[in-house]
Length: 328
Ligand code: NAD
Ligand code: LMR
Image 1 (cartoon, helix red, strand yellow):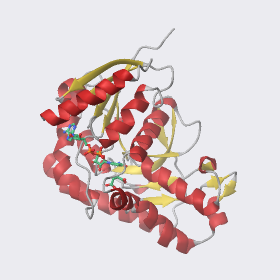
Image 2 (cartoon, rainbow, N blue to C red):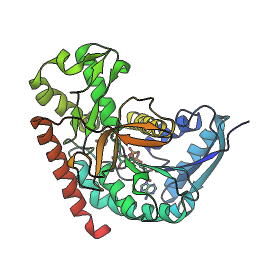
Image 3 (cartoon, rainbow, N blue to C red):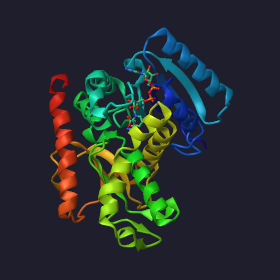
């Protein structure tokens, strides 16, 4: 018997990331090749954006995806999020060359108050929310705070792109297949302060840290490369990352919904006090997922260098949180 369709809301559906994301969701790459989906697509009411959305919808129709059970175009989050089971909040301004992601807070913050309220009012009570729009952690925090009737844990921020970038840099350094790297963690904010931590990582069962055995490379090459990768892409393309961001969003939602089989992944989630991170801070943690729930990997030792890195990214997030108090 075929499964009942689930509702997937995507905001910013006519944008760059939207274009790299929707076709993969509709083909079953996110929720499984046996899971029909209804896409509830949100764009701003502006005529140009709504027309662009119509064009994307025509292309989705022309793919004749067997799993695509319906497509809706919306200009109001109150209708776009109705009964939605999954919400990918992408729509917002990307940064341009020379900007930091935190500079987008004043531009994008208000979007996430309105969308958090709408999710609170009309989404499924079990909705799984992924915030992609930058600054992703603090936008997710804003949306969570605007949705007091939903469980805080249903709001997450995208750190998966940093996780994938870190894995790829390690694979290139060691000369191994990226898929063989396990137990990688990225702590904190989706910003240059994030701490990509390979102390526990293994490749084919061998310790990555021992194999690399080079603290200078870690501190002076690896961390800045991963942390500033978004800016490097903007400098090279003139536009922010899109296909890799969409890919990370698919990875994040797929793993959350379908499980990781014990594998560690990174998700930005509200802290419950783990590792000394104050409650509700939307922080990147290593997690495993099973049965539609994520669980923080607990009990990892934190050495002095790691603590310093974690403190720095936490301080930045708390500063961002302070800066949006007026929106809450
Ligand atoms: P884009 O400008 O190509 O598309 C954004 C789309 O969002 C536009 O079509 C715009 O009309 C729409 N939009 C704006 N406000 C909206 C609202 N209130 N409701 C619905 N739609 C709205 O941008 P993009 O390249 O797709 O990037 C989108 C966001 O994702 C940016 O904030 C970018 O910085 C962020 N991003 C995050 C990560 C991450 O790892 N977390 C990675 C890449 C990009
Ligand atoms: C990225 O990391 O590529 C995105 O967050 C876009 C950006 O502004 O860096």
